[in-house]
Image 1 (spheres, helix red, strand yellow):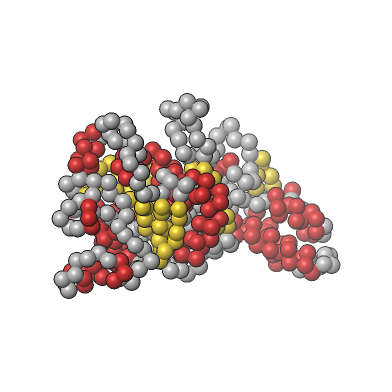
Image 2: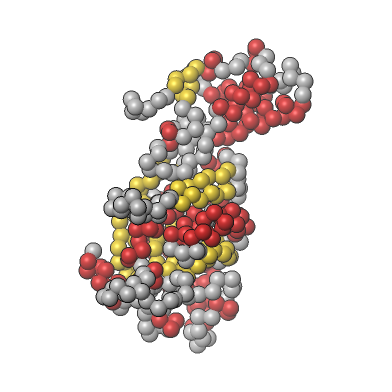
Amino acid sequence: MSAQEDVEITHVLDLPQLYRRPSRESLVQTLNALAIQPSTFNNELRPHDRGSKKIFSGSGLPGYLTSIISSSLSWIDNEAAKESIWNLASTRLSERSGRAALPSVSRTFTIPSSFPSSSSSADLKPDIQITLHEPSLTADNLGHKTWSAAYLLAKRLHQLRPHLPALCSFTSSSKVPNPPSPQPRVLELGAGTGLLGIAATALWSADVTLSDLEAIVPNLKVNIATNTPTVIDPHGGKASAACLDWSTVGNNDVERIAKGDDDDDDDDNDNAEVKGPFQIILAADPLYSPLHPAWLVNTIAHYLDRSNNTRESVSESARFIVELPLREAYAPEITSFKTMMESKGLKLMMQGEEVGFDDWGVKGGEEDQEQEVRCWWGIWGWKGDRAAERTEEKG
């Protein structure tokens, strides 16, 4: 830790000790003060700047919390008060046992909407505050957690507008506004808690379909409803949640082609809630199985806009934008994904790397721990897209 950090070193013995029979009020006050706020992965606000700044020496805080949970608290007469103290101690312990042990949490993420380094104060737009509910992580529902890659890409969205023809409101030559056009249609794949898609509705004033598996969609709808009056509506966006199973999209596509039916009518497949095509598709951290690259690429090729929705021509406005953590365990999946994208007729136009932070897998009782995550991001367009070729030349 740097010398500039204001950290108080406290011994566990300085806390109210059970053998002294502390009052209900004293225990509740202490347990509330020990609360750790959930991470929001802010690169500028490192984890040691959040929540409690006390570092405990001695036998350790987990042992102290466990002693409260196992105590009968016999000197406290009120049974409801005892339950409250036990619940608080259990919550404080789970906060120090990694994200998978946490109960449901809410996080508020700050997303920039303008360039502070290149704009005058008059041109700066206020940051967007997106509040997300994350249920307890049960079974294999990792989509109930907000991941660092989604936060990093959400923060980049306002910078990408000039590189996304579907969002440009002026022609490149005359700078005269184009005739009124419908809101750009955006699809987020594997939306999870909805951070990326909700940010897109506000920053791009877009009509965004946030999609995920059936088990994830109910919470996705909750987060859309929470942010509609404060984020989505005030910025002229639209948002809806829909079930989308990638594993069926490619199979259905193959079946239609085998039958001689190459009409991309979404009513013919098991994902009828999602109506394509889309001018922009987004995905953050979508690869965590050897099966995912093929499923993801098939889904992108199926839903990403092609002019007149035919195989013979391409859309000059269609873009797929992705952010992937560079985890060593999934390096083969990332390589396969890029190769398959090329084979489907898509071309990488822009790319870069950045570093963020995540609270997944952090354990050991230290409030200021958070793991660093290096991510790769890329923008893809159809091969033969002249705008894509011009962008690549400039890059």
